[in-house]
Length: 188
Ligand SMILES: [Zn+2]
Image 1 (cartoon, rainbow, N blue to C red):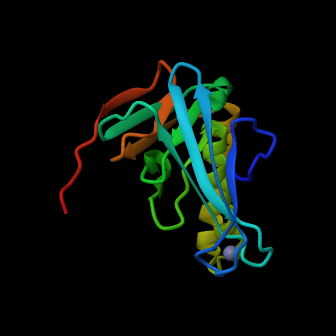
Image 2 (tube, rainbow, N blue to C red; image 1 turned 90 degrees about the vertical axis):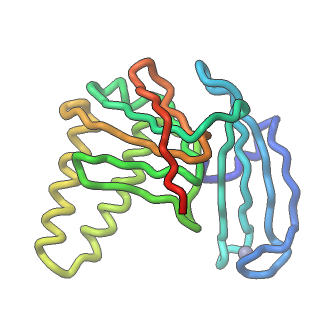
Image 3 (cartoon, protein in one colour; image 1 turned 135 degrees about the vertical axis):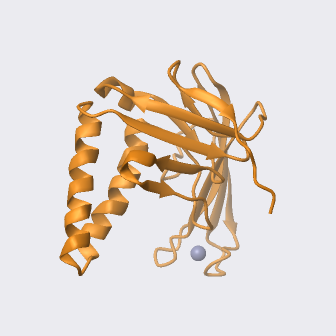
């Protein structure tokens, strides 16, 4: 979820809180829930600053049924797979091994409920930014090739394996084809 949906009847908001970034009283806290078919209830919560210059926001998701650290593997084989629901918590790492791409959790890492297409779009945005800002022609060329591949994947012309590793256990790919296994959490 990228914007607060005020039409959501389940949405609960607390407005005019202090923003941790700009320190103004323009922060809206919100919480809502969504029933994801074949999965269960998901709580979506976050904050968004209304100050146009600040625009700070942070989202996360949590599933009702708490589970163990998990690793989810899903291979797309057709265009229909793009509509498969994805729940990604802020602690999850997403990897696309064949493209040598990964998104690690971090301070700016968001949780969201989307689908495979939405997940690939987020990867696409990162590669597009790389293509547009890179100085070296080699990096540019690599980014362009990656975008072509991502486009083929979206059309279902090329299969791709997506791996989500979530120590919080809140992430999911909701498909019979998804392979879920225990994630070994390395102790720091
Ligand atoms: Zn702010």
